[in-house]
Length: 142
Image 1 (cartoon, rainbow, N blue to C red):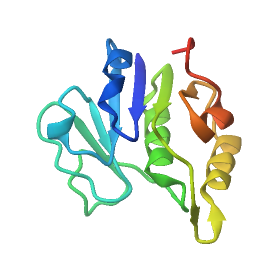
Image 2 (cartoon, rainbow, N blue to C red):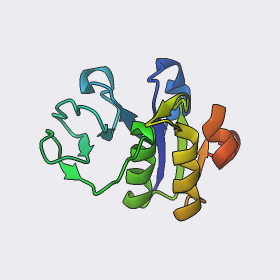
Image 3 (cartoon, rainbow, N blue to C red):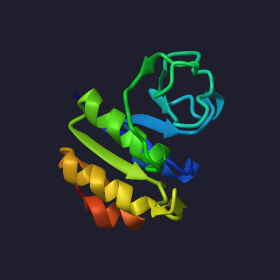
Image 4 (cartoon, one colour):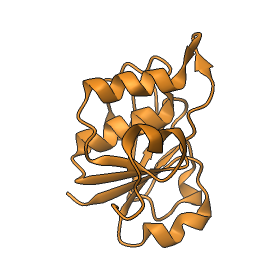
């Protein structure tokens, strides 16, 4: 399969990076991202009319695909990375996925670190922040 850009913060300034790649957006509405192939969230998944595929972890959501995923405070970004890996993309780049704060008294970065240690994430990199420190730099690689 091809390359996938996973967009968290939804900055439209990344359009130049997106050219020629599949796009997965997190916690966004489809009308704001007509170029996206995938929508994902651990919160509320917005309806995904059109050609995009919606991914959720609960069957009470409006979605096309449901994934077993024990989130434990890892954020929608971690769920999106999990789905991207399972979909079989050869290269996955994360953009705008902050890892600040805690969930259940545990730093979110710890949950990510645990996931990375237990799963094959060698085909995932990030453009900035804590995810780049954990996974490696996507600049020049993607």
